[in-house]
Length: 389
Ligand SMILES: *Cc1c(COP(=O)(O)O)cnc(C)c1O
Image (cartoon, rainbow, N blue to C red; front, side, top):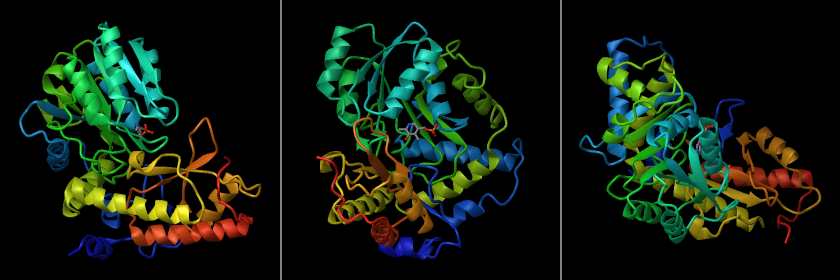
């Protein structure tokens, strides 16, 4: 079966239910019918069947990160992805340590904000809206500031869609003997990230991104010895990663009420991920989605924020047309009336919007989206999609 045939055979939304929307957003995103159906029964949080599902989920996530021994452990954490980032930062950075936060968008900024709340010392390298942090710049900062203990990097900075050079930066961080925390929230499961390639100490992701689950929890893959040494670091009872892990190891249960339906849906989503060919299979579909999207949009006259080599297969930022009749709110409403939900831009420099390539969507859906965009522009009277110079 080819990738396309496979996808067609299980595509739940080839003819979406009346009123159902395609979420072309970086999570929550469009999920499969099988994933939604997994949520149709109730589970006891103490029950052995549910605990087995939690254990399998943790095991599969470790395997996806290339962890085969017991060097790293997987700790799920209730809440959205940010809750898991916050728990990870608190555990991985000593109270008297200092972080270097590499920023080129909203999620790097958010990490610095979390450190500010926690009162942990940090330094930032702020590259603005869309430039990638360079390994040489990181090396320079680490040499100038030997007190830095830990570097924080976002893999795919979802606010622009840029894929940051994670391997090159990881090599520099490791050459300087520092800890590395990777926010791979929007890339894990679709862009390869394994400990043999990228020697991270901590990696954070969540249920509702490339593994195509529904929102409700995040997870941290962390070096076991680092976690074991983190006693007393947490600033929050509920976000204490070490306690969450210890309780789960001891009882098989989540420490506080788990998002049961989200966990079983995620378990179903993981099975589909494997059937699709794992990370490689998913990457191939998302890349193809992006290529069809970008080519189609450029044909309509739109321009991407990023050069091709920085475009992630996750989400793409397009400049808004300069045409006086273009209005994002109206554009959004026109597309929504045609069953597509897109995402506003997050740039400070220019008007833009974003379109996600992830979730249960394939080339056929992207082609329908492109037709819907063309219809929407016509309805608005926009006949030129070039951005401002
Ligand atoms: C989605 C995302 C997060 C977490 O956001 P939540 O809204 O808390 O789920 C963090 N980092 C990146 C890069 C993301 O894409």
